[in-house]
Image 1 (tube, rainbow, N blue to C red):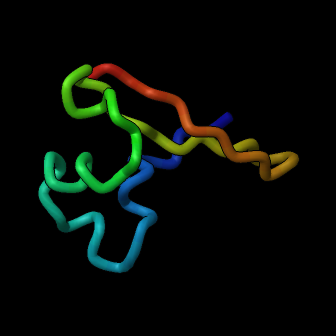
Image 2: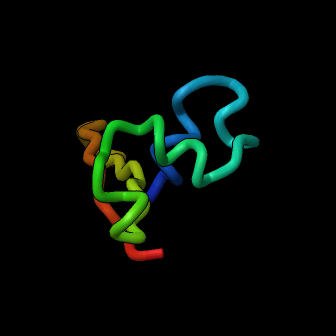
Amino acid sequence: MLESGRLQDYYDDYSPYMDIDLMKMEDGFTDTFTGHKCPHLYRCPKCANEEVMFIRE
């Protein structure tokens, strides 16, 4: 699996430019803001499978 960046960056055209803490309120993952975790998108280059994994900030 290859790391493809923050999940929030894929929401819309302006997401990569938005405040990170503001986007955490919109992502639907309840523990990311208080748990200091960031959801990142991982993709398999062979099968194109995608998975969200949380990394510590």
